[in-house]
Length: 427
Image (cartoon, helix red, strand yellow):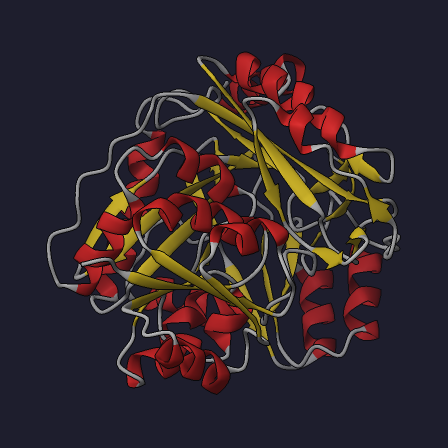
């Protein structure tokens, strides 16, 4: 019997999910934007606000969905998984209470403390902005300033890196944040490990390094992610033996403390001279990280989903052993003043063997147009990071001239800088 799967969300991450399951199921999708890549793969597509839990559940029922995959964190925060479960449609994604692991940074740190989850930095939670500013003045060292709620990866300010202490205090005073977390600044190299979780089990995927800064050389403001890469194995070139396993131990500890959690658990880590520390947890695939890991997953993703739904053991995961490099094309001016409404001429034929994932583009009758967010990504694969990066760069001829790209992601020079940085920290 063919499974009917509903995909919730319309970004690049969701395009990657759609491509991973479309050949094995009847795929339906709903999102607030009309993603052209998803629409081509789906048997049906409905324009729905993905945070409207009741509307999503009604659509799932209407198409006879056997299960659903929820992409964006905003949908999880809005209780879409709860609504689907209550409608009798299995949702591969945590309920809103468990999604607080991502959506409430104060809860996240307190959860780690209460359950002795390793890798938690020193932190303090404040409901009073002036008290937070006093803490900044008194703290001996640099701090990361984190709003408690969702900010799309762009709300965190790091003293000593992005801002001064005075600028951080001004940022807080000018904000409308009711609650903030201040935590010790972690110094090292960031990486991500994503895992499939269900029925108390966990299956992990290769480590990924994302690049948040807008401009080459890790300059400029934070973004939702300009691109990312994986190596041929589970680890990354700057990681030492045992670092990947230490990160997995953290994720396993989270699952032990949340035995009913289902969906993707994303751990973002800072590899410090003392080993991996937790930057944050997310309750869904990363974007762009999903576009690195799903293309090299040889185990059918649908098998993971049906095992999760049926209370079966999750399948052991097999990967192709290829390295990947993902590079996003974004509107000029992104993220601070994006040039929305610019026509994007994507030459799909020039992509070659690379993969093209559409993200936040506005599909009209006369073409594709930029919005205020990332437009599309290309992913190269190869037997080395260098080969994957070369394939991605060749494919970027598809991008046209109305978008901007971080061409340095995955280059030998930038990867070597990561290796040298960790070597210096470990001396």
